[in-house]
Length: 412
Ligand code: ADP
Ligand code: ASP
Ligand code: MG
Image 1: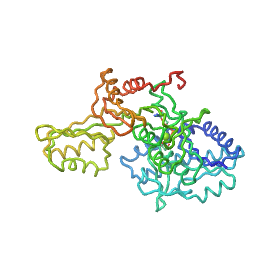
Image 2: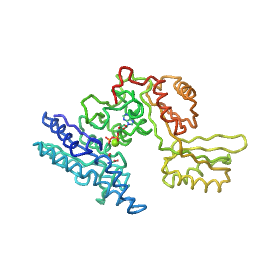
Image 3: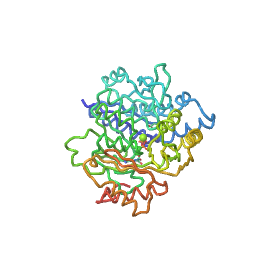
Image 4: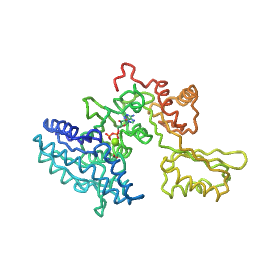
């Protein structure tokens, strides 16, 4: 018997009609003999609405209360799907994270899954029931409700698939697979048949929100076969798995990921003596700010310039800390620019090919786009540019590396 974990995202359960459509799909799959565990998100827009309400009531609500509030979105959809399935004559039972017991650490609003109890799920599956689990939520040791961070339902699904040793984890969403780049930005973006875990990790961490990064980390760690599919139309989707011989012929570049959720900070004229990088980044890290790209230029006047990027929401906090550090270490100046974006080319094929970077830079030069920062790893090249050029750069590079669908613009 095939055991599938299926996750339906916000747009897939956005209305009563959509929930009924998901129920039809699930019931049909159950009828042909599959065992099904279904993970749901909140209706599209609901999590944002709840966040908005919270901030209307209190400037800085506690993370604990935030989790009590945010977890309600998923609790609504699971119960409605269970009812829709029962209505179709398909036995089903819904569970909140706490009822399953999806055990997490105590980091409210960004908790990590530690373990998932299988007992209830197995019993229901053995009794021919579809099991429906609320995504994005769990409980800590003390029984407090926790949530897993935005997009966290993907991670609930993959973690369940890992624990239950499912045959496949299927992520149903509003696009029919993983594309060479966001199909909402580049019209002729092409669906990929296969993507390696490694590439998907880079793409997710670099801004492709189609899968939450943690879900890909989990899938990679426990070797969970993962597929992204459309909940609106039939199709093979995109398979994400380990790199194997069949993937040797993978294209040089698999995709372009990007995010405009970035800000760039520089501290100029830092004395060129040991310990300075620590003096700068120690307090930034202690404030819980994640630093991304870091570049240091050694000047010829015994000073350095250090530039780095942070998430845009952290700009003000990081800037304040950096100003204080500058004073302390007698640096010359702090500069802040929150109108930047990051764009990355990703592909395992890059390992064995030279010349990708120069082609990338040539393409951007032809468009007169200035590159502010560059960083590379074995399978990616990332650049930071002015935000207003982001879409132009994505399209130009998508063309230059011939990533588009040449046959038709099959994807609207
Ligand atoms: P869900 O609500 O189902 O979790 P998300 O909105 O989180 O869906 O993720 C799906 C969206 O991810 C798509 O609508 C698409 O705009 C975006 N996306 C960004 N990059 C890519 C990519 N490379 N391939 C496919 N989708 C992408
Ligand atoms: N509802 C949550 C969010 O909007 C979790 C998810 O959809 O995966 O982020
Ligand atoms: Mg999502």
